[in-house]
Length: 458
Ligand SMILES: Cc1ncc(COP(=O)(O)O)c(C=O)c1O
Image 1 (cartoon, rainbow, N blue to C red):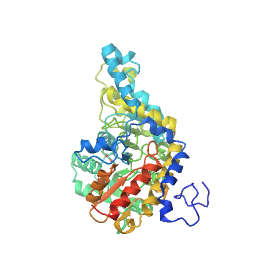
Image 2: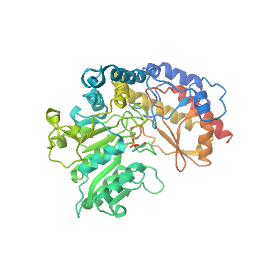
Image 3: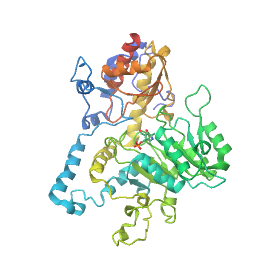
């Protein structure tokens, strides 16, 4: 990128005095797709057809039912890689052929099955392999982490979260407080953006940490805010929390597979993420968990235990003494769900081929293009506000639109036109152009459909 070019403009040359019509021209989208070095990855995914989706919803058929939908919902559920079906069928075949012997003789032996995703998962979150484990689901893992890292005392018992934390995280921290006999209302500190702003400023955040430090026992933050798409300043916030001696954990549901992460280097105490969004591992897929190695080596930490957290060397001695393995696996409880891990393995392999730096580069370009298209729609300025940060380094591949008038109706109209994106209360439409399988043409189709509906509201 040229140092003089603002980071959220595109590398494709534009005429000196380009008009809104030029920005919204279809050939430009097609040209950007032709120049995209990652374009071939789209063929590795099943892209649902508009006709199938609308028929399943009981809605009238679209004009072109066989056309792929405009899928901008990878922030909610990523699309299915084509290889996933055979990965799952392989496990079923091995089960039918081998029965219990599949534990050691399946194509991907089941006993160590969680090992097969470890290295890729570690690369995705910037961790050492022994700092990550694939297990359970996201909220379950948050609780397992808090069982270790939330150790309230009389003086220090508060938990700091964002005011717009995902509801499950709010419920989790409130129930942790109650579980320790504390009053959730006075234990949970919710940090809000300044009046009239949608995102939290890092400086405000750090000052709030200073203010509340003497009574704080844990900080739990979304790395990428689910509503606004804001990327938090991981390095500064983590370093500040550590300087104040407050354990810090990150919910990476919207960050894993979306932005480059460096958990080990940042020094986070723990992190948890799901794999069904940007990691395309299927609905309710097995989640991931990170514990920094300064903790994995500490076998005396309090934790909730099960036999899969026991050191494999002694696991089958079948004694009653728990000997935690000195890795993140020490927090796993049960033997891994083989059928559920097969899609994770299949999907994460794609990330090793595409690589996060290349995905991030395309992601910045794709999201900037989408923003430029939305900005070029004449009626957008009065109909909606982009509440996602405009600086590419402060966002991933999501743009959140706060719709000022009849937001639900606009979302319904987009759906009826073959766009898949989601709606979050009270008025936010989230659109996520995912670099692995979305095209610049998808962004163009979205903007064209949006423009039509803004010009003639449903
Ligand atoms: C930021 C965030 N945290 C937590 C969750 C809850 O995830 P799970 O249902 O996998 O526990 C979600 C789900 O979308 C989420 O977006």
